[in-house]
Image 1 (tube, chains in turn orange, green):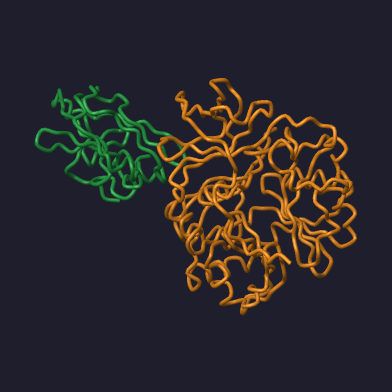
Image 2: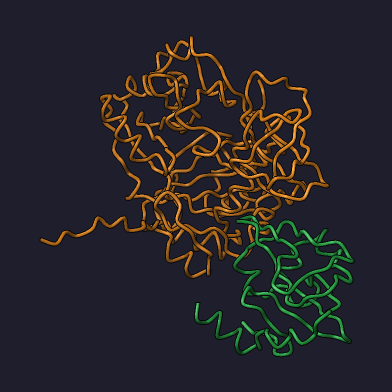
Length: 366
Length: 127
């Protein structure tokens, strides 16, 4: 008897044909055939920092919950769900019972009372199973929708040509809008680049129409995952799988800000007593170093192994190699550090992971 | 993609231009495109002795590090300082401003073991 082999066919987002049309260099990511770049990673990154770029982020999972599911979401997430106002979102973590990180997510409360949870593409099945096993009743809307990230100082100007009211959104605000001639689009003022920007969710078939407007009439630069990785490291944003995984707690990897003790989330008890073994630092190799610090490279303190690089890139904006590294928490912070780049120790300075100052549109402090 | 007819090639995607007894070496457009954005170029010191098809330099792109192999044996006469500070030249101008190394060949007969433009084209088409 012959058996059909299980096919792990690569998935495509609703924008796939657009990437092919533009001649993108593509690569599999989280099971999806994704654009890495269209012209050049650095040209695309530069356009986000100076003008505006658009990313297809449809591969990320989008899960809907009803207002009645709030109690479950409060149990699931480390943020203070109660305090999220209608029309806003909040960054949070999902922890396992030991306090290890299962995913980093954003939860939005819509003005209707329903919720939207945005989950990393690589964790979609894991999180769906986790939630189901703990009484969650979310509806996975990923395949029915598309998602685009419009990022850069000229993003508002471009988007406002079709949706003038997008100007009313401040950082982490989110609202339903109508794109003239296309249909409903939900927009949040969020992003993963450190620039002002928006993330748009629309029905799958509307995705290519909105993309086409942005790229043609909107004169927004198509940008791939290569640029996305450079931008997020420059801005100090972590990536699940590279900078954290289930083996670390939020306190081990610089994500304490996403945890609000006292909210009664899964993992909270363990987190209180769990020793903090590591910390996540930024590493700066300076302008004279000649090599990229890559995930897995050893970090030495006074010649002894003291940590490991978790993410790294060459930043053309800053003209230097930068990285995040997970350091043994017992190692003194002021020891001379070096990264082993292919058997050659390169001196680095540890500091903030935020290599570039963010330019998001925050509300003025009251 | 046009492959300059006046150059010689290696199967590892280096090109060689022989000019007044000097051998200028770079990587092909095909290679530069495959690498993607180049961020560092590690070139040898002038005076270094090199042997045909041995690793003589390396190029790091966002993706990975690749070794560059000498098309001819000889001595490194000079290297392109411009690509050290602007590695993106290798992506934009692989056959001229993005040249890498100049070799004074010690065994010019080694040229016969290199590929012609049409041989190189067949090689990359076949891939």
